[in-house]
Figure 1 (spheres, helix red, strand yellow):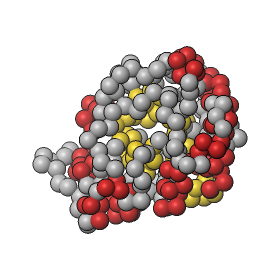
Figure 2: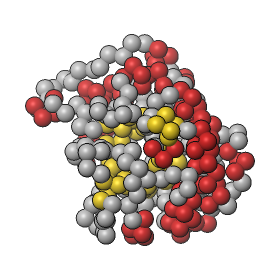
Figure 3: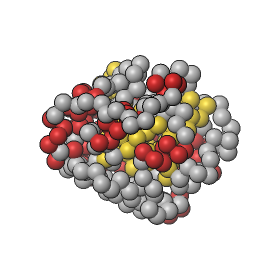
Length: 272
């Protein structure tokens, strides 16, 4: 889904600033509720077989039924066939696809998603990894054999040249997110393993401290999170219109049947 207006520059954000917050790798109802109540803007769910946080279609439907009005939902996928993407969009009503595989820019745009840019931990430049066509993307640390939730940071100094709508992920924790926010004012931040007690199990205290550190770094009282009313003054999210709140959808209780593509896929896509 296209960005409807240019995102604010870093200088503009620093005047009245609070980053977008994405809590990813959710697998339990209580963690969905906790993230929403603390003020998460985006709730992330993993549909990548082999990931310790992978959820099948039925479990995704169960968790989405617990999402309250407000946060937008993201499903993380990697080289999924169009039939699966249709099911995730048309039956589960996700707002965003987060693509971690070899998806082309055309496919990313077609399905209303954004791409992950993997940054090696020892990278000294982003020029070769960020294409001008990418107005909305996620930067995450590259670790061989893992597509996310690595717990590793990259050199945040590289963010000095990044403008636009960029989510920063990789190794964020309650004890370092404040420094990232204070120094670099990222448009958004994405956390998974840094607030967990085990893969897929969010730690309530770590979640609270993570949000509290962001509030502290932004000069906001931590008590502003108590009601779950997160301030949205760092620029609006790119448009995700046409998606209802998950809590209002009656068909979420119906059995999920993967849709079939109208055209045959190539062999590589079938085996992804």
